[in-house]
Amino acid sequence: MTPPRLTIGFYGTDGIAAGLAERLTDVGHRVAAVVDPRRTDIRYRFPAGGRVDTEIPALRRCDLVLICVADEELPDAVTALIPHVSRGQMIAHLCASQGTRVFAPLVDDVALVMALHPCVYPVGSPDAAGVLRDVDALESVPWLITADPGPPEGVAEVFVAELGGWPVPVPENERPAFAAGLQHATEHLMTVVDDACSMIDEAYFRSGGPQEGIGRALLRQTSRRVLEVALADPDHSVPGPVYRAAVDTVRLQHDLGIPDSATARSYRELARRTAELTPFGDIDIELWADGPPGGYPGRAE
Image 1 (cartoon, rainbow, N blue to C red):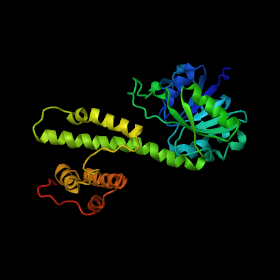
Image 2 (image 1 turned 45 degrees about the horizontal axis):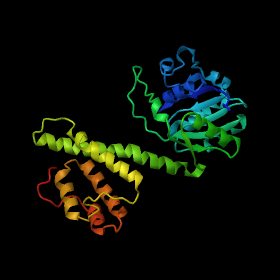
Image 3 (image 1 turned 120 degrees about the vertical axis):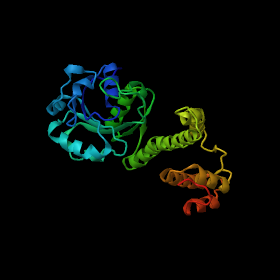
Image 4 (image 1 turned 90 degrees about the vertical axis):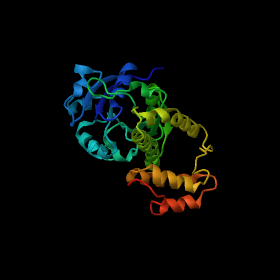
């Protein structure tokens, strides 16, 4: 039996909101209202085009209101919605780090509340309107769901399944831990990759190499393979110098290979953490990472 088709309103247009609106339309729901006080180009950002209502009172007529704002903006968004909700509505937000407690100011005035979050990092390019839709990224991804047992949790699970995802129930108090893990594996991973590519690109440029982007060309296959192995086998280690406890090699690479002090600091911290996670650990690398930088002559400052 097909679940009922809903009239859906969006408050906020952050992240994957545009792609989510497109997916909801594809499975038969109606996106009737999109409200974002920060934007004036709403009508060009969502598939409903000119038929979408952009005034906040329109949200009262929606069966489901999805809040798509940054985590730090969520409490203010909930406050803004208080005058514009009704008892028959469902309200959900897409923030990773918060559950349903944030809905306390309006929980008695709506039918049910849900905290949802697709575990996906949008990687597509913005369209002509500057919107990151990336609707395909929503296929077969896990969603964090936090909702009261019974109908609220059931509605959340059906909603996620309709979008092609699978639900991962998360208790309220564990949402920050899940969010931190997701951020560490996305935003911080991007930083490490960018730093690594810059190290190689700059060394290649200093040696007279003509090719731009050599760092990404060299790391593309290696990094992809390491990530696949790390996600498939948590006991597998990369047999690099930290794993081998080769502190002299680690120090040489640091002192002579990384002129940028900020990148060098990050390198030391990650070397120490990697040493802590190796099967036997290595106190020499940890002590080196905690000590002052330097040691090999000829380091470029």
